[in-house]
Length: 389
Image 1 (cartoon, rainbow, N blue to C red):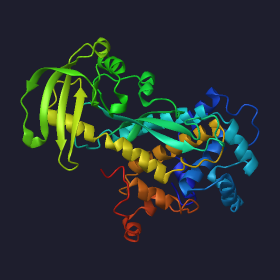
Image 2 (image 1 turned 90 degrees about the horizontal axis):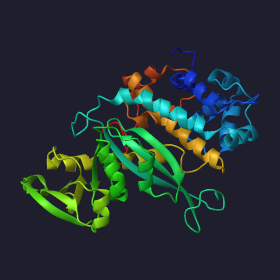
Image 3 (image 1 turned 60 degrees about the vertical axis):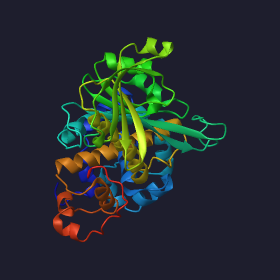
Image 4 (image 1 turned 120 degrees about the vertical axis):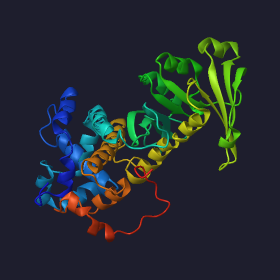
């Protein structure tokens, strides 16, 4: 990265363009396209995410204000609101979805040695979904309620590094638990879920895949106790039991014993009941595992706060999904850049600095040197962070 490159170009150097082009060719994204290719569209939309642009008009106005710099940023086509709008509707969103999963594969090993409160020799995943509200009159393809539209972002997050392992986008009507039908479970891994995913038929499939789950029980779940195990109540564990499902219908879908752990959270003054198919871990570790589920909630809050996935540049289904997948790709690119350049700043600080330095020619490492940090304003104590946990 030499002084002749814009910061934006330096960020784009972390994109594996050959693999991106493979995704383009898979879906014929550039078929009969003479101007404004998929690569140009990705660069423009990545710029919009990095600089928090508000609309297509805002994107075009900002970039066309510096036309002499576009070529050096890698944008080789003429840019107008019309061709950007057409690209949003016609460039297949699956191109960017596949590319985001390529970046996931690249980011995962960079964070595999990050420390987490619960030390296990197995991957730990947190599963949840977040709803993005839309206007029904503008997005009629995403019905949710009688008077509103919505889409759901289902995410399986690797809690070690807060890197998404699996992401899928559905309409708002799809129940969270149905995403389990689309997942391939990894033997030996731990899956942490809220009680919205309590479906014993699907959980039994997870159990048969030799994976482990930790999930909150519902109040109306009928269980029969078989054994009670000794617990240390000073740790907050109130009971540790081996149970079976007592309702005939649920027992037929999950015929094997489960483990029931009741935990009292003194900070929240709340009693939580967990169900798991793991019989070897200490009961307190089961409770600590469930605490890690908050990281997927933090992931959703973070990307909604710092990336453009709540307001959209286009109204079609293809435009909305493309924007979300490109936003996820930008998140992953910055996460990869942070590790490969060994930047000590948080992801929030990196994005804030990038937002005002895209046209600078300073090497990225120089921007984040100690002298630069001394001039930074201290972040708000309430600011969400992902990589300082």
